[in-house]
Length: 322
Image (cartoon, rainbow, N blue to C red; front, side):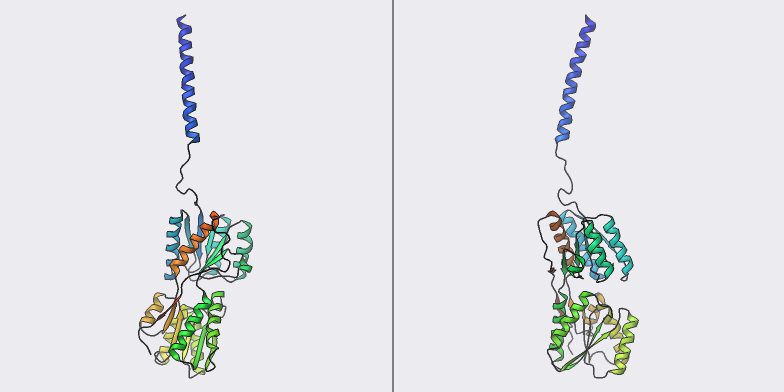
C-alpha cells in the first residue's frame, strides 16, 4: 500500500512541475523581444571615389553620425585618387551584398549607369547620389543631395563681373571629359558671361592632372596675351594654374576663381592669389542623404523629390582686393 502511495505522490508532483514549466515557457515565448534598432536597422553604404579628402571626410563623418541618430549602420567605402575601376567594383560588391541602400558619389559614365539602373534596381536597392549627380533617366536613382552646380557657376561668374567689370578676356579651364556637375558649372558661368558683349570667353581643356594643366597654361600664355581672368571648374587645377602663372609674371593682376573650399584653395584665397571660391556644404550632404534614405526605406517619405535636395552654396572672397 505504501508503495502505491509513493507512486501517486510522485505523479502528482510531476504533473504540477510540468504545468509550471509550461507556464514559464509560455511567458518566455510570448514576451516581446527588445531590439537595439527597433525599426531602422538598415545597412547603408556610402561610396566615393575620393576617399580621405577634406571634402569627403566631412560628408563621411556627418553621414555616420546621421546613421547613429536614425538607428542605421552606415559603412563608408571608397577608392583613392579617383580610381574609377576600384570605385565601380565597390558598387558591384555593395549590390551583391544586398545592402538596404547605397549613397554614392555620382559618376557620369555608362558603367555607373548600368550598375545603378539595372543591377541595383533588379535587387531592389535604392540609390541616392550625393555631391555629384547623374541624370535620373539614365540611372533610376531615387534622388540627389548636393549643390546646385549650375547656380554655383552663375554665382562665381557674377562675382567675376563685380570684380573685373564689364569687359575683359576670361579663360575657363575645364576637364576634357566633363562630369555632369562640371558641365552644369560651365553652363552657369557661360549663361552669365555671355550677357556681356565685351567679356570674351574661351574654354580650354586642361585635363585632370597637374601636368596637363601646366601644359595647357604654357600654350595659353604663349599664344594669347591680354588675358584678364581665369576660372577653373575643378579645385584640383587651381594651384597648378597659379604656380605656372607665378613662373611667368605676377599673379596679382589676374582675376582667378575656383570651386570648393579645400585646404589648398583656402590657403590661396587667404594669400590673395585666388579672388573667390564657391564653398559647398558637405556636412549637410552627408546627414541629409542618410536621413532621406532612411525615410524612403521606412515609407515615410514617398516619393523622394526626383530633382534633388539642394544644399547651400556661397561665395568666399579673398580678404585682399586687387
